[in-house]
Length: 376
Image 1: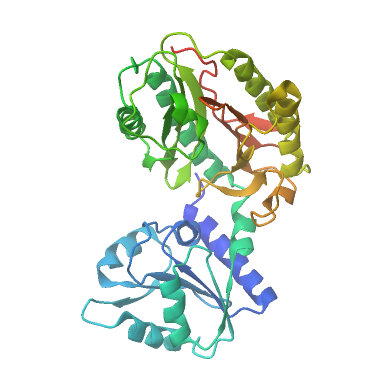
Image 2: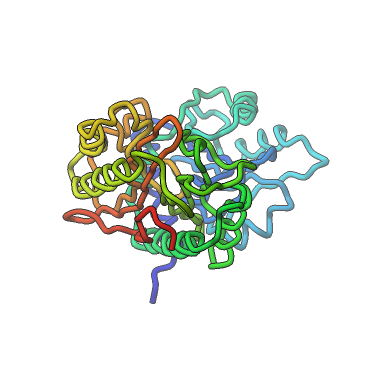
Protein backbone atom coordinates (compact mmCIF):
# COMPACT_ATOMS: atom_id res chain seq x y z
CA UNK A 1 0.00 0.00 0.00
CA UNK A 2 1.32 3.45 -0.92
CA UNK A 3 2.08 5.75 2.02
CA UNK A 4 -0.57 8.33 2.87
CA UNK A 5 0.57 11.82 1.75
CA UNK A 6 -1.04 13.15 4.93
CA UNK A 7 1.68 11.38 6.91
CA UNK A 8 4.36 13.22 4.91
CA UNK A 9 2.75 16.58 5.59
CA UNK A 10 2.30 15.92 9.30
CA UNK A 11 5.95 14.91 9.56
CA UNK A 12 7.06 18.05 7.68
CA UNK A 13 4.94 20.19 9.98
CA UNK A 14 6.45 18.58 13.06
CA UNK A 15 9.94 19.28 11.70
CA UNK A 16 8.96 22.91 11.10
CA UNK A 17 7.68 23.16 14.67
CA UNK A 18 10.94 21.76 16.03
CA UNK A 19 12.84 24.35 13.99
CA UNK A 20 10.59 27.13 15.30
CA UNK A 21 11.35 26.14 18.88
CA UNK A 22 15.09 26.06 18.12
CA UNK A 23 14.89 29.59 16.71
CA UNK A 24 12.81 30.97 19.54
CA UNK A 25 9.86 31.69 17.24
CA UNK A 26 6.28 31.39 18.43
CA UNK A 27 4.68 30.52 15.08
CA UNK A 28 5.00 30.32 11.33
CA UNK A 29 2.34 32.04 9.21
CA UNK A 30 1.98 31.03 5.56
CA UNK A 31 -0.12 32.89 3.01
CA UNK A 32 -1.64 31.16 -0.02
CA UNK A 33 0.77 29.33 -2.30
CA UNK A 34 3.17 26.41 -2.51
CA UNK A 35 4.49 26.66 1.06
CA UNK A 36 0.95 26.19 2.35
CA UNK A 37 0.53 23.24 0.03
CA UNK A 38 3.81 21.67 1.14
CA UNK A 39 2.65 21.46 4.74
CA UNK A 40 -1.13 21.17 4.43
CA UNK A 41 -2.13 19.76 1.02
CA UNK A 42 -4.21 22.84 0.17
CA UNK A 43 -3.20 24.79 -2.94
CA UNK A 44 -4.77 27.92 -4.39
CA UNK A 45 -3.16 30.85 -6.24
CA UNK A 46 -2.34 34.03 -4.31
CA UNK A 47 -5.16 36.58 -4.36
CA UNK A 48 -6.49 39.40 -2.21
CA UNK A 49 -8.18 37.28 0.44
CA UNK A 50 -6.97 36.75 4.01
CA UNK A 51 -6.22 33.02 4.05
CA UNK A 52 -3.41 31.78 6.28
CA UNK A 53 -2.01 28.55 7.64
CA UNK A 54 -0.83 29.30 11.17
CA UNK A 55 1.66 26.79 12.60
CA UNK A 56 2.42 27.39 16.30
CA UNK A 57 5.72 26.17 17.69
CA UNK A 58 3.73 23.69 19.76
CA UNK A 59 0.23 22.39 19.27
CA UNK A 60 -1.98 21.88 16.24
CA UNK A 61 -1.82 24.11 13.14
CA UNK A 62 -4.96 26.02 12.12
CA UNK A 63 -6.34 27.65 9.01
CA UNK A 64 -7.78 31.17 8.95
CA UNK A 65 -9.86 31.49 5.79
CA UNK A 66 -12.87 33.00 4.05
CA UNK A 67 -15.98 30.90 4.65
CA UNK A 68 -16.38 29.91 0.94
CA UNK A 69 -13.10 27.98 1.18
CA UNK A 70 -14.35 25.73 3.97
CA UNK A 71 -15.30 22.74 1.84
CA UNK A 72 -12.08 22.83 -0.21
CA UNK A 73 -9.97 23.03 2.94
CA UNK A 74 -11.82 20.18 4.62
CA UNK A 75 -11.43 17.97 1.55
CA UNK A 76 -7.80 18.71 0.64
CA UNK A 77 -6.01 19.33 3.95
CA UNK A 78 -5.27 17.24 7.01
CA UNK A 79 -5.43 20.38 9.21
CA UNK A 80 -8.63 19.99 11.22
CA UNK A 81 -9.04 23.34 12.99
CA UNK A 82 -10.53 26.06 10.80
CA UNK A 83 -11.41 29.65 11.73
CA UNK A 84 -13.42 31.47 9.07
CA UNK A 85 -14.69 34.94 8.25
CA UNK A 86 -17.31 36.14 5.77
CA UNK A 87 -17.67 39.22 3.64
CA UNK A 88 -19.84 41.00 6.20
CA UNK A 89 -16.94 40.96 8.68
CA UNK A 90 -13.63 42.75 9.04
CA UNK A 91 -11.05 39.98 8.47
CA UNK A 92 -8.46 41.76 10.61
CA UNK A 93 -10.87 41.87 13.56
CA UNK A 94 -11.57 38.14 13.10
CA UNK A 95 -7.82 37.52 12.83
CA UNK A 96 -7.32 39.23 16.19
CA UNK A 97 -9.92 36.92 17.73
CA UNK A 98 -8.28 33.89 16.13
CA UNK A 99 -4.74 34.54 17.39
CA UNK A 100 -6.20 35.03 20.88
CA UNK A 101 -8.16 31.77 20.61
CA UNK A 102 -5.01 29.79 19.77
CA UNK A 103 -2.90 31.51 22.43
CA UNK A 104 -0.67 33.68 20.24
CA UNK A 105 -1.83 37.12 21.39
CA UNK A 106 1.40 37.60 23.40
CA UNK A 107 3.74 36.15 20.76
CA UNK A 108 7.20 37.72 20.59
CA UNK A 109 8.49 36.39 17.23
CA UNK A 110 6.56 35.32 14.14
CA UNK A 111 8.03 33.90 10.93
CA UNK A 112 6.29 34.36 7.56
CA UNK A 113 6.88 32.96 4.10
CA UNK A 114 8.98 35.03 1.70
CA UNK A 115 6.11 35.52 -0.74
CA UNK A 116 3.65 36.97 1.77
CA UNK A 117 2.20 40.25 0.53
CA UNK A 118 3.14 43.34 2.48
CA UNK A 119 -0.52 44.17 3.18
CA UNK A 120 -0.86 40.90 5.10
CA UNK A 121 2.27 41.53 7.15
CA UNK A 122 0.93 44.98 8.04
CA UNK A 123 -2.39 43.46 9.09
CA UNK A 124 -0.61 40.98 11.35
CA UNK A 125 1.39 43.83 12.86
CA UNK A 126 -1.86 45.52 13.89
CA UNK A 127 -2.94 42.30 15.58
CA UNK A 128 0.35 41.21 17.17
CA UNK A 129 3.06 43.29 18.73
CA UNK A 130 5.62 40.70 17.73
CA UNK A 131 8.87 40.82 15.77
CA UNK A 132 8.41 39.48 12.22
CA UNK A 133 11.01 37.66 10.15
CA UNK A 134 11.16 35.61 6.95
CA UNK A 135 11.22 31.80 7.09
CA UNK A 136 12.78 31.21 3.67
CA UNK A 137 15.72 29.05 4.73
CA UNK A 138 13.58 27.02 7.16
CA UNK A 139 11.14 25.94 4.48
CA UNK A 140 13.65 25.59 1.66
CA UNK A 141 15.89 23.37 3.77
CA UNK A 142 13.00 20.90 3.86
CA UNK A 143 11.82 21.42 0.28
CA UNK A 144 15.22 21.00 -1.41
CA UNK A 145 15.38 17.24 -0.97
CA UNK A 146 12.40 15.59 -2.61
CA UNK A 147 10.72 12.52 -1.17
CA UNK A 148 10.07 9.53 -3.41
CA UNK A 149 6.45 10.66 -3.78
CA UNK A 150 7.61 14.13 -4.87
CA UNK A 151 10.12 12.64 -7.31
CA UNK A 152 7.38 10.57 -8.90
CA UNK A 153 5.21 13.66 -9.45
CA UNK A 154 8.16 15.47 -11.06
CA UNK A 155 8.90 12.44 -13.24
CA UNK A 156 5.29 12.48 -14.40
CA UNK A 157 5.49 16.20 -15.18
CA UNK A 158 8.77 15.69 -17.04
CA UNK A 159 7.35 12.83 -19.10
CA UNK A 160 4.41 14.97 -20.23
CA UNK A 161 6.77 17.80 -21.17
CA UNK A 162 8.95 15.38 -23.18
CA UNK A 163 5.93 14.20 -25.12
CA UNK A 164 4.78 17.74 -25.88
CA UNK A 165 8.30 18.85 -26.79
CA UNK A 166 8.55 16.22 -29.50
CA UNK A 167 5.01 16.86 -30.72
CA UNK A 168 5.57 20.58 -31.24
CA UNK A 169 8.86 19.89 -33.02
CA UNK A 170 6.90 17.98 -35.65
CA UNK A 171 4.54 20.90 -36.35
CA UNK A 172 4.79 23.11 -39.41
CA UNK A 173 5.61 26.10 -37.23
CA UNK A 174 6.89 28.45 -39.95
CA UNK A 175 4.17 31.02 -40.43
CA UNK A 176 2.82 30.61 -36.90
CA UNK A 177 3.29 33.38 -34.39
CA UNK A 178 5.12 32.80 -31.12
CA UNK A 179 1.76 33.29 -29.38
CA UNK A 180 0.15 30.59 -31.48
CA UNK A 181 2.93 28.07 -30.82
CA UNK A 182 2.84 28.87 -27.07
CA UNK A 183 -0.93 28.27 -27.05
CA UNK A 184 -0.40 24.95 -28.83
CA UNK A 185 2.15 23.93 -26.20
CA UNK A 186 -0.08 24.80 -23.26
CA UNK A 187 -3.10 23.06 -24.78
CA UNK A 188 -1.11 19.88 -25.36
CA UNK A 189 0.39 19.91 -21.85
CA UNK A 190 -3.11 19.83 -20.34
CA UNK A 191 -4.37 17.37 -22.96
CA UNK A 192 -1.69 14.88 -21.89
CA UNK A 193 -2.80 14.98 -18.27
CA UNK A 194 -0.96 17.81 -16.52
CA UNK A 195 -2.74 19.62 -13.71
CA UNK A 196 -1.42 22.88 -15.15
CA UNK A 197 1.23 24.22 -17.48
CA UNK A 198 4.70 25.18 -16.36
CA UNK A 199 6.67 28.12 -17.73
CA UNK A 200 6.19 28.65 -21.48
CA UNK A 201 8.54 30.63 -23.70
CA UNK A 202 8.69 30.72 -27.50
CA UNK A 203 11.61 32.90 -28.59
CA UNK A 204 12.13 33.09 -32.35
CA UNK A 205 14.84 34.73 -34.45
CA UNK A 206 16.11 37.91 -32.78
CA UNK A 207 13.79 37.32 -29.82
CA UNK A 208 15.81 34.21 -28.99
CA UNK A 209 18.74 36.50 -28.18
CA UNK A 210 16.85 37.82 -25.13
CA UNK A 211 16.49 35.22 -22.35
CA UNK A 212 13.58 36.91 -20.50
CA UNK A 213 11.37 37.12 -23.62
CA UNK A 214 8.20 35.02 -23.25
CA UNK A 215 6.32 35.13 -26.57
CA UNK A 216 4.82 37.72 -28.89
CA UNK A 217 2.98 38.18 -32.18
CA UNK A 218 6.22 37.79 -34.17
CA UNK A 219 5.85 35.28 -37.02
CA UNK A 220 8.33 32.38 -37.12
CA UNK A 221 10.32 32.50 -40.34
CA UNK A 222 12.55 30.01 -42.23
CA UNK A 223 16.05 29.89 -40.72
CA UNK A 224 14.92 31.21 -37.33
CA UNK A 225 16.41 29.56 -34.27
CA UNK A 226 13.41 29.06 -31.98
CA UNK A 227 13.94 28.43 -28.28
CA UNK A 228 10.99 26.43 -26.95
CA UNK A 229 10.95 26.44 -23.14
CA UNK A 230 8.12 24.43 -21.62
CA UNK A 231 7.03 22.40 -18.65
CA UNK A 232 4.04 20.97 -16.88
CA UNK A 233 2.68 20.74 -13.34
CA UNK A 234 1.41 17.51 -11.78
CA UNK A 235 -0.17 17.74 -8.31
CA UNK A 236 1.75 20.93 -7.66
CA UNK A 237 5.16 19.71 -8.89
CA UNK A 238 6.82 21.19 -11.96
CA UNK A 239 9.08 20.18 -14.81
CA UNK A 240 11.21 22.47 -16.97
CA UNK A 241 13.05 21.98 -20.26
CA UNK A 242 14.25 23.98 -23.28
CA UNK A 243 15.07 22.98 -26.83
CA UNK A 244 16.33 25.12 -29.71
CA UNK A 245 14.86 24.30 -33.11
CA UNK A 246 15.24 25.57 -36.66
CA UNK A 247 11.92 24.51 -38.16
CA UNK A 248 12.76 25.18 -41.79
CA UNK A 249 15.69 26.43 -43.86
CA UNK A 250 19.33 26.89 -42.96
CA UNK A 251 20.37 28.20 -39.55
CA UNK A 252 22.39 31.43 -39.29
CA UNK A 253 26.15 31.48 -39.78
CA UNK A 254 27.94 30.24 -36.67
CA UNK A 255 24.83 28.66 -35.19
CA UNK A 256 25.84 25.01 -35.59
CA UNK A 257 29.25 25.45 -33.93
CA UNK A 258 27.66 27.38 -31.06
CA UNK A 259 24.99 24.72 -30.70
CA UNK A 260 27.57 21.97 -30.33
CA UNK A 261 29.40 24.04 -27.72
CA UNK A 262 26.19 24.36 -25.69
CA UNK A 263 25.62 20.61 -25.99
CA UNK A 264 29.14 19.94 -24.74
CA UNK A 265 28.76 22.38 -21.85
CA UNK A 266 25.50 20.79 -20.77
CA UNK A 267 26.86 17.25 -20.80
CA UNK A 268 29.94 18.30 -18.84
CA UNK A 269 27.84 20.15 -16.25
CA UNK A 270 25.53 17.16 -15.76
CA UNK A 271 28.55 14.89 -15.37
CA UNK A 272 29.92 17.26 -12.71
CA UNK A 273 26.82 17.02 -10.51
CA UNK A 274 27.23 14.68 -7.57
CA UNK A 275 26.64 14.84 -3.82
CA UNK A 276 28.96 17.27 -2.06
CA UNK A 277 29.78 19.62 -4.93
CA UNK A 278 28.33 23.14 -4.97
CA UNK A 279 26.21 24.86 -7.57
CA UNK A 280 29.02 27.37 -8.09
CA UNK A 281 31.39 24.56 -9.07
CA UNK A 282 28.93 23.14 -11.61
CA UNK A 283 28.37 26.59 -13.08
CA UNK A 284 32.12 26.99 -13.51
CA UNK A 285 32.33 23.76 -15.52
CA UNK A 286 29.69 24.87 -18.03
CA UNK A 287 30.84 28.48 -18.22
CA UNK A 288 34.49 27.55 -18.76
CA UNK A 289 33.64 25.41 -21.80
CA UNK A 290 31.61 28.21 -23.35
CA UNK A 291 34.25 30.85 -22.60
CA UNK A 292 37.11 28.69 -23.89
CA UNK A 293 35.24 28.12 -27.15
CA UNK A 294 35.27 31.86 -27.82
CA UNK A 295 31.82 32.84 -26.50
CA UNK A 296 32.88 34.67 -23.35
CA UNK A 297 30.20 37.09 -22.20
CA UNK A 298 27.47 35.37 -24.26
CA UNK A 299 26.17 33.05 -21.54
CA UNK A 300 23.84 35.49 -19.82
CA UNK A 301 22.17 33.59 -16.97
CA UNK A 302 22.64 30.83 -14.43
CA UNK A 303 23.59 27.29 -15.46
CA UNK A 304 20.61 25.93 -13.54
CA UNK A 305 18.27 26.07 -10.57
CA UNK A 306 16.28 23.82 -8.31
CA UNK A 307 12.75 22.83 -9.33
CA UNK A 308 9.90 21.44 -7.26
CA UNK A 309 6.77 23.21 -6.12
CA UNK A 310 8.45 26.36 -7.40
CA UNK A 311 10.05 26.83 -10.80
CA UNK A 312 13.11 28.54 -9.30
CA UNK A 313 14.36 27.16 -5.98
CA UNK A 314 17.73 26.55 -4.33
CA UNK A 315 20.23 25.23 -5.09
CA UNK A 316 21.34 27.56 -7.87
CA UNK A 317 24.03 26.61 -10.38
CA UNK A 318 25.53 30.07 -10.60
CA UNK A 319 28.67 32.03 -9.79
CA UNK A 320 27.04 34.75 -7.66
CA UNK A 321 25.69 34.10 -4.17
CA UNK A 322 22.95 36.74 -4.02
CA UNK A 323 20.13 34.17 -4.40
CA UNK A 324 19.98 33.25 -0.69
CA UNK A 325 23.52 31.85 -0.92
CA UNK A 326 22.00 28.99 -2.89
CA UNK A 327 25.08 28.49 -5.06
CA UNK A 328 27.16 27.34 -2.06
CA UNK A 329 24.67 24.77 -0.80
CA UNK A 330 26.28 21.32 -1.09
CA UNK A 331 24.34 19.27 -3.61
CA UNK A 332 22.56 16.30 -1.99
CA UNK A 333 20.72 13.21 -3.21
CA UNK A 334 17.04 13.96 -3.77
CA UNK A 335 17.57 17.44 -5.14
CA UNK A 336 16.05 18.18 -8.56
CA UNK A 337 17.55 20.87 -10.78
CA UNK A 338 17.79 22.18 -14.31
CA UNK A 339 21.00 22.31 -16.33
CA UNK A 340 20.62 24.96 -19.03
CA UNK A 341 23.78 26.44 -20.54
CA UNK A 342 23.23 28.87 -23.40
CA UNK A 343 24.88 31.14 -25.93
CA UNK A 344 23.24 34.38 -27.06
CA UNK A 345 24.39 36.18 -30.20
CA UNK A 346 23.17 39.64 -31.23
CA UNK A 347 20.51 38.15 -33.52
CA UNK A 348 19.82 34.66 -32.17
CA UNK A 349 20.18 32.43 -29.13
CA UNK A 350 20.64 28.80 -28.14
CA UNK A 351 19.56 27.18 -24.90
CA UNK A 352 19.39 23.47 -24.05
CA UNK A 353 17.79 22.68 -20.72
CA UNK A 354 17.12 19.39 -18.98
CA UNK A 355 15.87 18.39 -15.57
CA UNK A 356 17.99 16.04 -13.45
CA UNK A 357 17.53 14.27 -10.13
CA UNK A 358 20.62 13.97 -7.94
CA UNK A 359 21.31 10.37 -6.92
CA UNK A 360 23.81 8.85 -4.50
CA UNK A 361 26.52 8.80 -7.16
CA UNK A 362 25.47 11.23 -9.89
CA UNK A 363 22.23 12.10 -11.65
CA UNK A 364 19.13 10.66 -13.25
CA UNK A 365 18.06 12.66 -16.30
CA UNK A 366 14.31 13.31 -16.01
CA UNK A 367 13.80 14.99 -19.40
CA UNK A 368 15.17 13.31 -22.49
CA UNK A 369 13.29 14.48 -25.58
CA UNK A 370 15.30 14.92 -28.78
CA UNK A 371 18.12 17.43 -28.25
CA UNK A 372 19.21 18.29 -31.80
CA UNK A 373 18.28 21.52 -33.55
CA UNK A 374 16.54 19.84 -36.48
CA UNK A 375 12.71 19.48 -36.50
CA UNK A 376 11.15 16.04 -36.22
